[in-house]
Length: 389
Image (cartoon, rainbow, N blue to C red; front, side, top):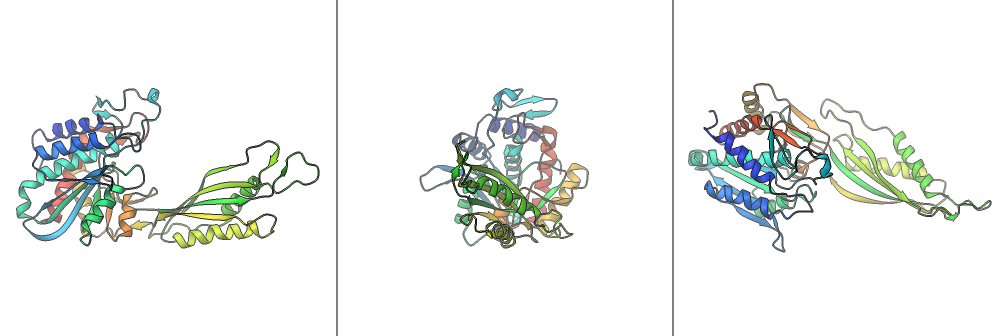
C-alpha cells in the first residue's frame, strides 16, 4: 500500500514544526516541542498523556491504541530532545530554522530524532482507523530526556506499564543502510591515582608523581589483551581514557591524579570481566608500595545486547525495509549504546535504528533527505500491519 496523497508533505510540515521548537537537552524546556506534538496528535484523534516527573516537569508523551482482539503490544519510541547547537557560526542556516535545499532539510534534531517522531505520528494516524480489526496494541513514547542520558521518559513509561512490558520496541534513530539489532554496552570508572608530594625543585626528596603513575597505569591497561570479536558478536570491546587531571602548581610534585575510563562491553567482555581487567592493572601498579593504593569508583552502565535475527519484529522490519527502500537492509551490531541497552536489561527486545538518510548528526548542518521519509513510513507501517495482523 503506498502512502496517501499529501502524506509526505504532512510529514515534512510536522518535521519543520518540531525543528523550529528548540529542545536542547539540559538547555531548553521540552514543553514547546512536546506541545507541538500533542497538538498534532489531538488533531488526528490520537489519545495520549504527558509523562511528568515527581515535580511535574514534562518528560515526554505516551499513548496506546487498542486492537480489536488480544495480541502483543509493540512500542514506537523516538527522542524529542536534541544535542546542543554548538558553534552557531559553523551553521550555514540557524539551527532552529528548518531550511530545505536540494531535497534536504537542515536543522538541529531533524535527524536525531524529530524525523522519527514525524514518521511515527503518521504511522499512528494511518493505522488508527483499522485497529479494531487488528490484534494487540500499538503504543508510543516520545521521550524528552534521552540526550541527557537519564532516559527519564522511557523509565517513567515503564513504571506506568508495570507488569505488562511490550513484546518489542522500535526506536526511530536515523539511517537505512542497516537495521540496528544490537550494541556494545558500557562501564565507566573513575580512578584516584595516588602519589607522594614533594617540592618539584628538590635535589633530595623527589616524592612520587601521581601523574607519572597514571601514565604507567594507562600503559599497563593498554598492554593487557582484550577478547577478539567472533561470529556471535562482531565488534571487539574497547577501553578509552576520556579524562585525566591532577596537579596544579609548578612547584609541587602532584600527590593525586584522577583518571576516567570508558569501557565498551561485549558478551565476551562483560561488566565482571572489565572490572577484573582494570583491577589487574591496578594490582601491578600498586605492587611496589611506593604510594597509597589507587581507589576505584565504578559508575553504572549497561550490558551489550544482540537480538535474534529470526524474531518476528526483526523479520518484519527487515522485509518491510527491503521492499520500501528497494534494497536489502542487513541487521547490524553497533558500537554506541542506546536506550535499547536499557530495555535489554528489562528483557524487552528493541531495534535501535532504521530511518531517514541523514548527514552531520550532532554536528553543524545536521540534515535529512526528505524523500526518505516515505520509505521509512512504509517500513514501519507495513511491519506493524504484519505484526498486529
